[in-house]
Image 1 (cartoon, rainbow, N blue to C red):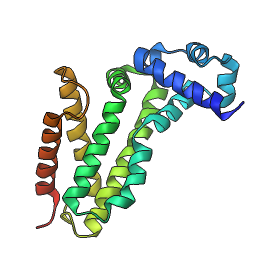
Image 2 (cartoon, rainbow, N blue to C red):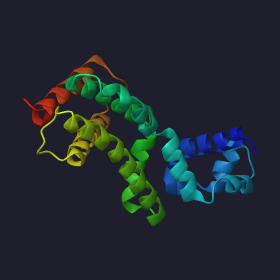
Image 3 (tube, helix red, strand yellow):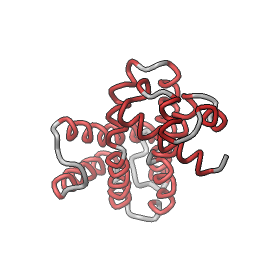
Image 4 (spheres, rainbow, N blue to C red):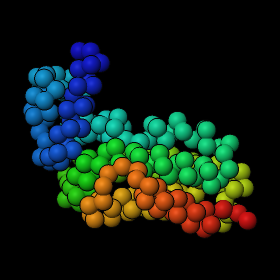
Length: 196
């Protein structure tokens, strides 16, 4: 049981959940797509929820954002926020179908999926909170603002923008118009959070 087997299972799960949803994708289908026996899938993952948790970790923007944070600390606040915004949005765009399915499904999903997804969101908010905590400690943002609240507002702003654009059928990718919109968000966000 090599790493490539595990990676094939993760990729198959990601692809199937992106097209059929968590509830619509069985472990048997995932195993078939990965070209392994279902028992092999269960040797790597204790169950569907554990597989889902690992897919979230593997295909999310969290690792990329975590690696980015040390580099952002030395940039001016607005430039750091702009870089974070672009990377975050690119991560959302790269997983467009996956995010669309999960957003629709999570409200009526089994409790195990809600729990895994909730843990994922806590990790994501944790990474963003670390960025804003560091900015506050460096005197770049207002001391009266809670970094976790800022992180949630930042996430909501970008995630909301993605969903509205998606519902309107706007083309994928970071088009010049979308880039201009994101730049406006950064400016608005900076004016509301930074110290003067």
